[in-house]
Image (cartoon, rainbow, N blue to C red; front, side, top):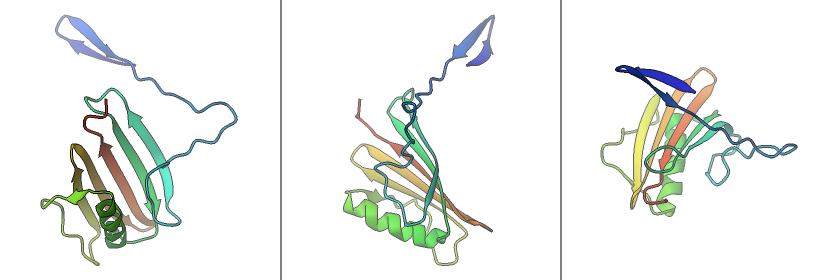
Length: 130
């Protein structure tokens, strides 16, 4: 629950979390391609956005460039087109951000290198899915 003052009133927002059935293991990252040995840390679906949205937070030992090349190939095979405003990810890049579109679907992928490897964040917006 989030409460925010608004003039002479208070606005409230309620977030609802759906837990997996008791005794089951959540399948984080299900349906989203990942490089081998990638750990999916979070997989959050937002149903209160104007269009359904999903955010994945992942970590692996590949470089940002290797991750970028993997998703460029994978998403091209699924009909996504890389936006021209995306960063030019090179073999020496410590961070990259790429934007993709497939019709009304949009995806943003960000890769940030640190001492432990690379953190990968994927934001997926499914336009017209409702």
